[in-house]
Image (spheres, rainbow, N blue to C red):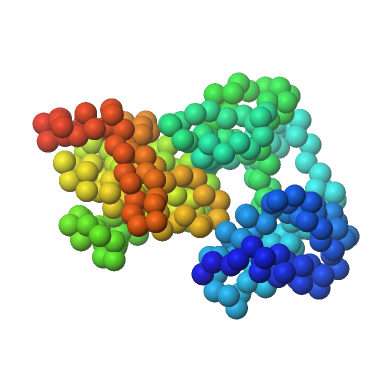
Length: 295
């Protein structure tokens, strides 16, 4: 259920006051929270988070969000990390995928596919700190080796849950084999880098969508039915438009360890408009004749 912006601000003010904070709106999407600790809060992020819960839980969700920020600030004060100590940092670095919305200009990042950026972060339990090139300059490791290390740490964490579902309520889904939904760990999106390690790919890889950091939908590529699968994946992604931590609504093709764009999508008031990528469109014409070469 969606919560209106003014309704959220009123709830935020009430919950913050009960915890000894005062709030002041300082921009279109920024609120300064002052009390024992002072910090900046982005209402649009909180609104997406709150909307995933039933209304009776909204006050608790807002309170937990404020408390998590406060705990993180206190942890930084009481036990600050020495970001120059790579012996410690090497065990904390993780990685995930983001959309192309800017998140600072100095963060260590690389483009994985159109609309997808991979970044390295330091896991702080209650939060994640983006690794910058200034931090990397202190460490005895190169940029590409850092990505390898972060990916290795995420793989070691494991924890991916895979559920196959027919999604009968989604048009055309009943014409396909069940679609895989991957959920679970905090750094779930990084698992698209080694999707073939999970039982969700076919002989020619898989098409997938990553609508938010908490969910991946995947369908094995076995033949020309992948065209229908892309339509269904796009419709599933559209259901996550209001989710917290969005990534994008595009559909990708994982094949032989690489991600490529399969289709872009655009949601209108009445439908989801799907535009296949030229390269993928050309491949579909030969899918029933290609050798099974995915590894």
